[in-house]
Amino acid sequence: MSLDNIVKKIIDEAQKTAAVVGKEADEELDRLRGKLTGEEKQLRDDAKKRAEADAAEIMRRRVSSARLEGRKRILGQKEMILNEVFAEAKEDLLKLPADKYLDLLTELAITHCAEGDEVVMLSKEDASRLVDKLKAWNKDLNDKLKKKGLKGEVVVSDETREIEGGLVLSKGRTEINLSLDVLLSELRLTLEGELMEILFGA
Image 1 (tube, rainbow, N blue to C red):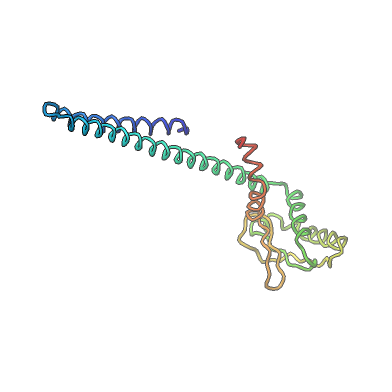
Image 2: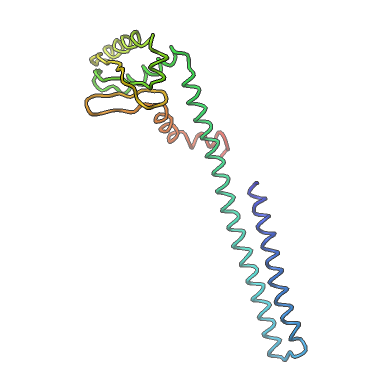
């Protein structure tokens, strides 16, 4: 349901409420019609004004509530679409061919290695599907780290982590979570305004 439809629905309900308020006031006034004095007529006019004011206030509140509800629903829909965009991005990354996926892991490791002697831990799934390529990848990674001026002594551990894609860098008691979920969450914080503009023009 669009914001306009929600607003219209609530306005219609408010108008019905206003009509009921006015009808009740008129019925009460009709009962006293034969007894009206000048003072009673003034009271009737005051009652009708109050009824009209009450009806207007009811409509104002309901319209305001409708617009707020509409904005909440639209925001919820935008969040849902962005969630889908990032979920699809993660799936695409997980489905990369092995060589391209390892290039991604290389970039992550080179960017975040501080000394070049950290331990790399993968997800159980990645460790299994990449097992035949990890030894050569580890050597290539260390060669690139040395060219960067680091030790080039990174080791790929047999130990795995409960992550979906990406890797974890460990040294001593310190671990850096470079899983796809963490990386995409950081990207979302950076890109959300731009994506909202692209997707929704707002």
